[in-house]
Image (cartoon, rainbow, N blue to C red; front, side, top):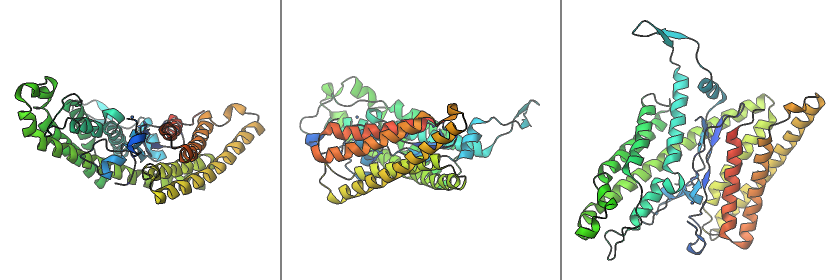
Length: 383
């Protein structure tokens, strides 16, 4: 209910950092109408925003925000989970046929389930393919209005069913977190309810049968369609909140380990991404620069992020110097560190520019730079 949803990012391949950040949707659905422009495995952070008029609550809206930032995506997997997900088990267990099979690793299976949850969530809030965007297209038909139009609605119930099926498969194992699993159950239940209502209506809308019966069947099903879409959107929002909670706990633990190990480069990288996430969450509240309190929060986050990036810059230069001193410049820090750093600095600059010029294109640049930083993070830092 509080955030901008960025589409949750793809799995990171970082060797040391194992937290996945979500990207954000590009179009800013929270800008005034005159400024509107209509568009992540392991786990990491990302935002979102609801694309419909009828369901104008903050819960779905936030997740599709910038119509792409999904905070974040935003589930973090610890380093051990990352190893478990990539290193095959060598232990064996006998099968019914007598042949030995790799022993199941509960921790590895739970990490895989969390990855599937995050990926499914990303698909549910993925820009124009999101549930919110499809619901918006349904609402725009104005089925029970005086002049309904059947040209806007798109999507298919099979899209929702496919995601529900993936979630059910992962849920059979579970994530090891009861609240997160319960949120997934909610998405599956409300998703399949929507599918049950939408499926018999799908051929009606695809064949433009409303032109034959003058919208009689469409109007009869309209209340159920609206309720089913809203129910799923609420469940998606709950899932996003739970993913954020799990990610935040993982991030805090991971940062403590990195600091204890003296890995300041990765520590400050993760710290900067965490502040960037706070920045974009606050950005969701500015309401076209009309919310002064929200603007103050974004400004504060921008200043905090800039300070964090200064520490990251120092750590990056120190790592480069150490590699050079050892005569092994091939072991210099991966380029993605500098790329992430630069993208976040540019994001801050675009925010300050947006306050001055108020151009929608500038706002889109803020989101683009955040997504670029997330992309650098998720690509990993292996040499």
